[in-house]
Length: 407
Image (tube, rainbow, N blue to C red; front, side, top):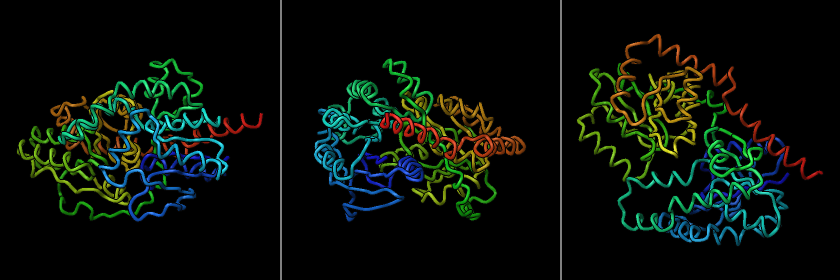
């Protein structure tokens, strides 16, 4: 089959898209991607077996905000819609695979026009994510834009339409699938789960044993990846004030917007824990295995919200592969997986004191740490909690769709 993917972002970007596209390409499908263009990027390109077409629809935050607002008025992106029909015809595309909710309306509008199947791939609970993404933003213009155009209730209605009109829906975790079925009385047969597990090639990243040389002799609690209000990094910083063992340090190796990072620095200063909290900034993906493997504990302190309770981060499976204990919040998918695999401990989401007590427990029990780490490795290798297993659900979906074409 020839698959056309729609992405309201530049590529390369989200690792989930690269993994899905690569799996489909390896299975013999032809992949075309229509996405946003960064400055100096070519309009036509190939990468990871994907034929990429880029359009100019927001190369800076102001332009992105403008087009997001335009799209949110009708849930159809005029530039993507204008480009998509010719792109489909020129490349003889058989199916539209739209990544996340913002471009779903555009894909469904094309479906009505030319009767092409649409797969809606929900990377997250987008309507409820809007409740938390902008929580720490202070810019009054950004706030006005979000109130007018990014209203969660409007996007919830759009999500309901998408779930019922798309031919198939991909959810990222069981909790999300169950929510879509329950809230919208959706056909359970057309909603599948393709989760954010990690490819075992992650273990082949080069190891840098000096990655924490500045913190030699310390008990390292590591947070890696994106940072935002819903991620609970503020809870992790707050937990440091309750630790009697000052040998514990919190390493934050991740990225977020300027306002978010400033808020976290200010919080560390206000609580008097700045000497125990260290920000490494954005790190290349090739360093993630080292960051996780040489930490003593890997932490995912998500707040428990309708958003986080319906999604799952790649770093859960990456941290388990790295062989060190996971310390996660009671956000539903995190709690379910860690309790099932016994690969870590769970603290009450948002409770900094409970988090500090779990850190103390691990810091004083090396045997427990080793056992939990081994359980994580076993679950993500022998236990099949990896991309090699989960990509089969995506391939089976396309096999099913391809079979329907031949009838």
